Structure formats: C-alpha cells, structure tokens
Image (cartoon, rainbow over all chains, first blue to last red):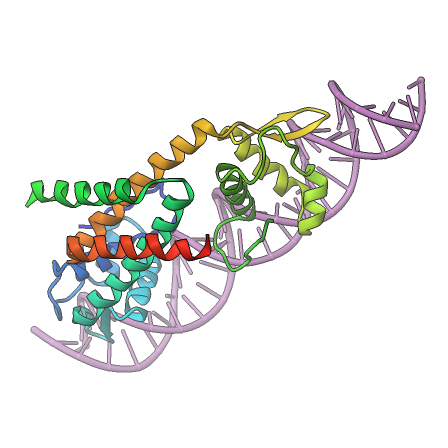
Length: 125
Length: 125
DNA sequence: TTTGTGTATTAACACAGTTAGTACAGTTAA
DNA sequence: TTAACTGTACTAACTGTGTTAATACACAAA
C-alpha cells in the first residue's frame, strides 16, 4: 500500500502523506475507516513513529483524515477534496502549457499528446 | 535576470541553474556569449561564489554552458537542448494526464483547458 | 486495570545547503 | 614580467531539516 523511495529527495513523511492523499482521493480508502496506528505503521515500514505522526499531522491539516485521541486516525469524506485536487491539477496544466509554448511545442502537438496519453491509460481498465 | 526565491524549498544553486536553462533554451542568451564570472554574479546576487560555482557546474554537466579555465563560462549552442527539453515536457504531460484521469477530469475538459491556456498566453505577444 | 490509542517534548545524529577563507592554475592586457 | 582577471578545488564551520530514540501523559476500550 505504501512504498518509501529512499532515492526520492522529498522527505519520508511527505511521501507517505502524498500516497495516502492519492488513495483517499481515488476512494480506495473508505471514509471513516481507520488507518493503521502511528506505531503499527511505523513498524510495518520500519521507520520511526515520529515520522508517521508527522505524515498524519499533514494529512489532518489538509482535511484528508481526522484523528480522535485515544481511538485512532480515520479517513475523512473526500467529496470536497476531489474538487480541490482537480483545481490543483488544472493549475498545473496551465503552468505546463506555458512551458510547452516557450519551447515551441505547437498547440496541435500538445493536444495530440494529451489525447494519446488519455486513451493509452484505458488499456488498464 | 536572475531572482532568488528564499521561500522556495529548492536550493539556490538549483534555482539559478534552472533560470539560466530557461534563458538559454529561449534563446535570450546568445550562444558563445559570456556569463558573468562566478565572483561577479555572486556579488550581484549577494550570495557566496561557491553557490554560483555549483550552479555553473550543473549547467555545464547538462551541456547548457561550457567553461574555459582562466577565461570564463560561455553559453553553449542550444539546438539539441531544445529538443531534449521538449521531450521532457511531453513526459510531464503524460504524468499530468494520468493524474487528471485519476481525479475524474474528462478528456474534453482537459483539452478545453489546454486550448484556453495556450491561447491566453498569446495576449502577451 | 491493562492495553492500545494520539500527542508532545527533548536530545542526538546525519545530511545538504551555504558561507567563508584560502590556494592554485590559466588567460589577458598593461 | 606583472597585475588583475578568470575557473577550480579544498577545508572548516554554521544552519536548517529530516530522522531516530526515548519518554511521558491523556484518553478510550476491553
């Protein structure tokens, strides 16, 4: 479920938080279901509980999970989050299009690539 | 020409190198023209010469500039580089399309956004 | 009461980025 | 030749961040 990439320059807590964000936004993790405890996940990943704690804190700050003292951490509802994430992605599109234009990539070439990539993914469905 | 963003999490040498990459790929900096010396640019940006040295080293490693001992650093020809950069950008498109699909952004919505952003930029020309 | 939760705190360590200072070799022009 | 530039290399010190380690405490559930 969670893989740590030690070659990745980003910190572990950030990798973990981002991975959970994906799983939550995709709906793989059911709202209100319980996450592994800080200590258990730390054991499972062979890292320090503090690092998991930090990842969970980030997720809570972003509204992805909620935590109940003494009981555990739980997945939050994701309806609103999905919308936020979409807007984030469209902002990234904007930035990428800008860069592509700068490098002289034609609009048609760009659109072709988008279509190609979009349909390529359907093989997996 | 070069601006350092201290709020940016990336290191200074990387910001500088990337900024030069942009300027070189866009052709703003003429091939074979001379860059500021390590010491001068360091003074201008109020940072340490070692940091500039590192940025220049990165640029040389990537083929963006070439350096001549005792004379200075010079802009490399950018023809081949532009092609490489384009391929990099198309890889980013692939990744972004994947994320957009995951979040349930329709192909049409995505294409609309690309067209919109592509044409929006033309206002500046 | 015991065990498992989240949470907070402190100390120590590692690593990367940055600064500072020095040194040396090559180029250029006076 | 000399002086003033260049690039390049090296070491030492400082800083911030990520990570680990070890505790401690409050709350919940069996």
